[in-house]
Length: 461
Image (cartoon, rainbow, N blue to C red; front, side, top):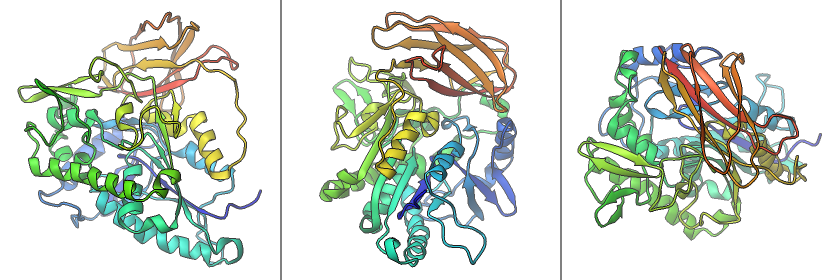
């Protein structure tokens, strides 16, 4: 296998980096331990909350990022359940990328997974990225020959794409960047972040023993995940977050988060090459909160934009999954019918990344696929039934299999349902013990034209 000549940097999304406080890991789920990780995080909540007025700086609180999450990770009330990055890294290794060895005499690596403190401003993490990437690229180039003119390609999931964009457009990274591959990146924010910040933790999280709401509202990164697009229902139409008063959220922090998106959009519009260098992979066909309605001090989310349901990846709506200068029907987008927390493991996404990085032909499994819409809650309490709603898009009705799997890959439930005519069919799954689960909806045979969709949920005790 020919060694690729460029450096590849992998950036996870929010929650996707393990965190250490002094000598103790405070956020590091491993296989089968999602509930234990949440309890550990809860016990360290005071150490992790950020001071008011932090802005784009580091708090000096001895919290450090360690590595990328390999397994499912979820914090109720912060973003969405997400599977880890083991399959993505394995695919990159299979095409010739490898991390640096601990042997000082070994050649440098060309695969650089970078963890970051996802509580902090994306501006801060973009600046930090420069301090890590540029020396690594220099070491790689010093091999000479074909490596002399090497550049960097970024592979970014979710919020990691915002960090990379800030580095590229605002920290001098454009000159050495060859490609920016984003997977489910909220280019224009997410209505889900708005709901989590205003309403606070999900129902029932009081059993966690801590309130994560103050932590969420202290995180600069969460303000940079608020919707940049007009999404709040008002008598005169949809309003931006900066045009009205939002309960519980400081106007200055909201404005600063909006300014983050404005500066990125302006810089990208001024640099024509940025569009050609960007490869956006977006999730589609999943019920996704897109707009919001304020009722007193709370917000209610809507899946519609105007009178139309445009869908998304169940976390990032399609209206926010692209740059402001890229329309939703653009041929520049690669659309995959799966959910936000599984996109970075989806085979079609991995094939797309493979093709972008190597420019090799991709073998297509089938000439036609049938897309699914899957709707399931992020969290239920033990004793509650898990409703899983499935609809088939198009006019090719087929039976599908719903499989419920534990963190340890044990199948706890598997059943067949037959959605028809685009109408959702809801299946109720009873008796799930506390823990994290994967809900996989697939065709019945390996040759099925059904494009599989995967969702993650937490059953809290």
